[in-house]
Amino acid sequence: MILQALAKLYDDLLNIGAIPLPGWSQIKVGFALCIDENGEVTQIVPQVRTVERKNKTVTENRTMELPAAVKRSSGIQSNFLWDNSTYILGVDEKGKADRSRDCFNACKQLHKEIIGTLQGREAKAILSFFEKWDPGKAGENPIVAEVKEELYKGPNLVFMVNGVFAHEVPELREAWTRHYEQADGETIQCLINGENDVLERVHPAIKGVRNAQSSGAALVSFNADSFCSFNREQGANAPIGKKAAFAYTSALNHLLAEKNDVQFVGDTTVVCWADGAKPQYRALSSASLFGQAPPAGMTEDELRAAVKRLANGLPCPEYDLSPDTVFYILGLEPNAARISVRFFYRNSFGALMKNVNDHYERLRIEGERSDTLPLWALLRETVNPSASDKTPSPVLSGAVTRAVLEGTRYPAALLEAVTLRIRAERDIKSAKAAIIKAYYLKNQNPKVPKEVLTVSLNESSTNIPYTLGRLFAVYEAAQERANPGISATIRDKYFNAAAATPAHIFPVLNNLYQHHIRKMDAKYRVFFDKQVGDLTGNLEETLPNRLGLPEQGAFQLGYYHQKQKRFEKKENN
View (tube, helix red, strand yellow):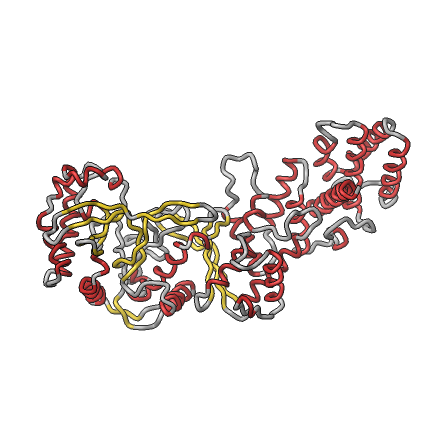
């Protein structure tokens, strides 16, 4: 299903002219090798451009539409009309002169095979270059020497003949298309499109997945020795035709090349798209789900309104958005020389927006600065802020993302991770409180009733763990009033123990409270005694000896809500 969806995306992109024709790809190019009609090298010109990347101006190599890249593993295979300096010039940057010469000769042979009979001046100039150029003396050429250090970094070079890029010459383009379409090999029925086509044994590489090999990794691949079923090796185990393999890899590489639209959840690289390749759907999902800036011309309020409208099954004609459009989200992560699929989501855009909107409604809590908590920010709450590696667990990241996208139960590991952070930090901030609230709203538990899962303080709740959490917050406030500027409060010493074993800790806290109350003015004694009296009136004579994990969640929410109420009063005053 994933490959079929990507192959369909390729057709959609091709229809709107956003992707090259079969046999052509968008390739990063660092230099242009300029030659004259006689094949003599005249200069090597850098090919760079300045672009905006997430509010930053960066310089990068130009992207050009070039003949599709070959898939290299350990063998020697050349690209047509472009390649790195080892293939084009025979530059030896690794101390392997023989291999560099073999690479140059492979490139030379490929060009002679494809354009050997052409009569155009550009074709003749390129053939003349290969006949005259001595790869053994490449490093001694003064023109090469000027940029040798840059060439050693492996940028791609293209040919430019008398100021014209060779890959833009119609005669050379037609020659490549003929060569590409005449591929030999076993004919099979393609699993993606059902057509008879030449088997693609080694699929083109996927580039742009974070932490994967920079040269590209495979989404579909088979080890020749380990995976051999019924004497079928490599790609023959899952027969996919050359056209379909090119289509799905080209579409995926196109998505990954759009850096502003690529998202990251932990170590997972996330791309998304809609049927018809309409960019407005991708922009809205990135803003609503991953916290990116709203699409151009849309404010934050308009973004929230659009999400709610789509969630209710209504179109947004002003932004050309329909809830019925099929939408896809694909999460990829590196796995050695291959790419593994962390998650794949397919549904209507309206269904996605409903799940996202419901998720944010569950997270909504007093004190949170934003109406939304993007996935990356939510997962950040599960990681030690002092850790050198702040990447959340890949398994947890994938499970949480799937739960949000599909509207299913949150994984228990999310609650466990957040609870561990609360215990370690001995405090509960708005994001963690929001996660606990959302978790129990979706994963209902009778020990955490809905009366405690409110946006703000529920003063009418008689739930004992929730009331104990509120009482702890009042005790802490009294201590801070009695000791202005105190650096450590009862929260730092007793918070975890009070949440887990209240019968043992709250008598101690009450004794401390009596000590603190005697330091205050009469008006503050009355103020705090009234709160403590109201809360203890909701408690039984015997406090629970132990609270389980769900009850501790209610305790933590009670503490957070009571403390937030205190801050609100300060702001009002």
